[in-house]
Length: 163
Image 1 (spheres, helix red, strand yellow):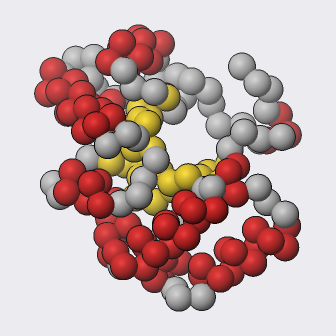
Image 2 (cartoon, rainbow, N blue to C red; image 1 turned 90 degrees about the horizontal axis):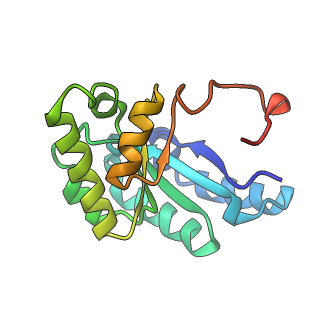
Image 3 (spheres, rainbow, N blue to C red; image 1 turned 90 degrees about the vertical axis):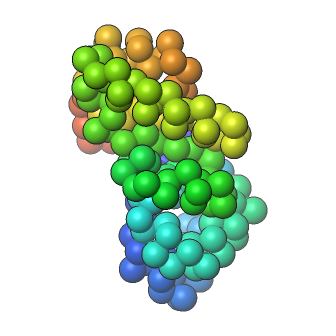
């Protein structure tokens, strides 16, 4: 019944040639709808073995999975890689979000990342949102989603109640 489930990937998984077959087999074995899975990876992981990463992403993208680039903005080469990775969602690093109400440079960084992501047809997520004021500011800037304690505290799925 979940709309989407996000699964974090690490560089060891993406660099393992058998991992793609393992995941394909899991989808088939457990009858998992591809469109309900979003694979997340941090930028540095995505570029370590770029050819394997892109191959993995293209395979599962064609099947209906989505991809999120987590903690985006930490690396200086971020925009260059963003153009070439088949990513659907950019999760803006929380270090830019948490102090943006008091720091105009953080606002400019968040706005810049949002503008580039939108130009590439990607959705955006503001991480580390801890207050209604920050969530409102992100909404006014055009950020699509918010993630953090200001949205909801982590909870067991058994305790999940839709907002």
